[in-house]
Length: 441
Ligand code: XAN
Image (tube, rainbow, N blue to C red; front, side, top):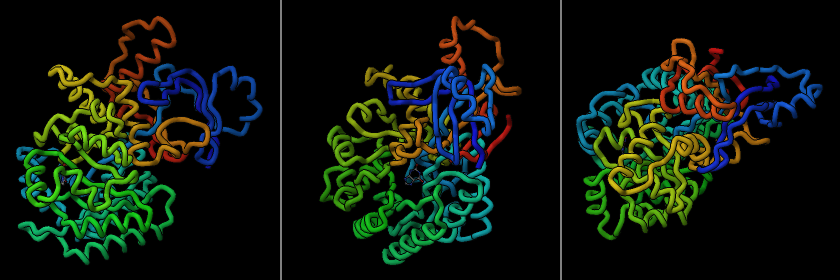
């Protein structure tokens, strides 16, 4: 594996409020970041790097951590941009379950998943947390695609045991057996990048017994576990009717042992303060999915309130309830929803710097991967993007206005341009663990 030194603008979040952007260098050896510093520090130790490949970034280019998608449904990609005219529960029955039920066909699964993984990598998603479908073998195709194209991924075989009108569910014992077999098969790949995640779909599709069994499997294999919570008011009503002993939706999961620090819950639009405090105290993370919350008319997730209550938050594209495969879109939608809530007098909008954090280090924390990825620090694995804020044929023309007063202002300009206006054309290189997976430089 090559030894690299990047020289130029480097941007990475230290925390929600601290975006570190400077001109300097970063070195990588065997996929791991080995040093970061100023240009002067590099000049003083040139000899040390004589066998390294140098990548000198141009003035409108910068290096940033890879984007992290904390919640997306790989089998739903063939539906992207379709059927968004129904609320959640109708949408699932009419569009989503019929498509997902097709993944008993391995060839179909393999071809869709190869395309999905490549699409996400092109868009700079170096880590994705995937929902698969009900099918163990189909989901293994997703694992193979992520390994083949070198994406970091958590892959879940979806579990459901409540009847629906197209027979897209299994009995409890089949679900528990297949989940365990799926985990064992994924572990047999011995991939450093791809890991299994236990995936009860949500409390509308799973009963108490199944959810308790799945949480035990997650504990046995020390796996992460993911589901959906409080996305839509009709969904919440339905869940509280089915689990009448529970006072809140979160309580339904808590009584099954699902709410742990290895748990990622998508949506969380309608959590009460008490539920947020429960999430914070148990270390449960939220994958904020603003695109699907809007498209399926589910609601406006109060992301600032979640953060202020101590909940760890990352971003999810949530295709195909969400209509975009890129976390750049999720950043903008998160800022928009938060701004709408500010306009309604409900919360202070998140800033673009905070959106950058949520898409990188926040996501890594939400997935419990922040010891390895999420920002640039010596010892972390090198998942990164080279961005050209004004790439040829890209969405932004270089008017060079406002004229930057100094280097610092220029850095803020190119970062903002990319965050607010950029797309995959601006992402000229993508690295996962030091290996290049997209190269348009
Ligand atoms: N709840 C869900 N929400 C969503 O946006 N997409 C889904 O596939 C799903 N399943 C349960």
